[in-house]
Amino acid sequence: MKKTVLLLLTIKILSSCTSFIKQDSLSKSDLEYIAELGLLDTNEKILIFSSSLTTQKSGNFLTDKRIASYWFDQDTSKSYIESALYSDIIKLDSVNLSDAWTYNSYLLVTRKDKVKFKVYIAKDQYHKFAKTAFDYWQKQ
Image (tube, rainbow, N blue to C red):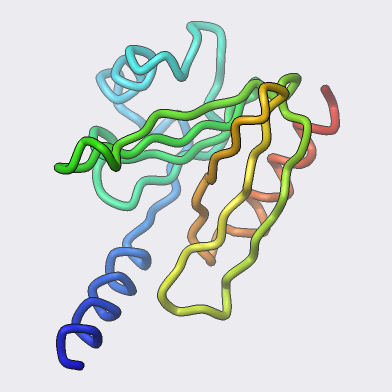
């Protein structure tokens, strides 16, 4: 029982550490790193960036062209890099878990190739992140 409570508290603390950053606040090396991951073109602008730890470890973000998410875990089977250009998205579902204290809300992205992935959003930025994503997707 104590382990379960400790695990839940740890998850809550980590989920509350998510921060949102605009491209202007990302360093040149952060932007180069994201580009090396294949998630940012030279003429692409990050609108909202979120990381629960460091930019090198995780990121969930919107650009003027895509939605992207990446996570690098010590257990490499849990690591992933996902993105979708707005024009390649066939479905965008919003899952608002702002009432749940152990989980971040997320957007569930479904691409034309039927691949689905989640883009996690801290509850204090949920509405802004989701609205921006839907606005850019609908423009495509």
